[in-house]
Length: 254
Image (cartoon, rainbow, N blue to C red; front, side):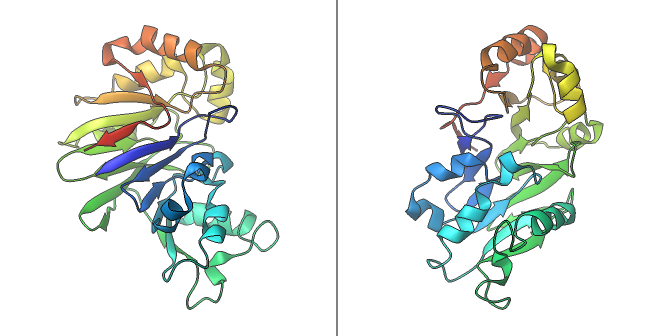
């Protein structure tokens, strides 16, 4: 399996893109602004989208994706979401007021987009690639994902604050290789991080103590203009885990 980082920032500006990853050539994990950098040929090949939650920085390109390829495909794009996230998308985006409901275009029998429910702990098998939702705690219902090739696993936490059940799920992964974990704010913005249920460097250090398996740690979702400061604090508090800052274009092979 190959995972390519299309976007991993907590905002936009310059070369910054919000969260999205391309798994092999046909699966998106989240659909932030980074999706817009794909070519038309690449967009046409996407068959599946797995969403962690419904916040705009993780879903903003989904409406444009399905609209763009709507006349270029013979089968629907399957959007894998929790039931709660699907309800939010239907009520607030694909509602014919903000955007057309592409799960009913051109009709409900042959739509451009279809939803498929995911549940924590229940793997989705895509031709031997196992994608399993993991627990997360955020301001809206959210999940992370384990991507398992059989040879190795990569965990993406999505947006989350402290979540013991997440680490319980991670610590039983015997082929764990990578953990991509968010740290959205610097320590000076702890109060904002707490209110928005994100991590900050001191909190990340506490969370990483809960990791009982060896893994390479990558930090994502840094806020624009604060990346250097936040990473310096991460390295100061959690340097024993050798965390690295995730960047656009990074490719994981596993």
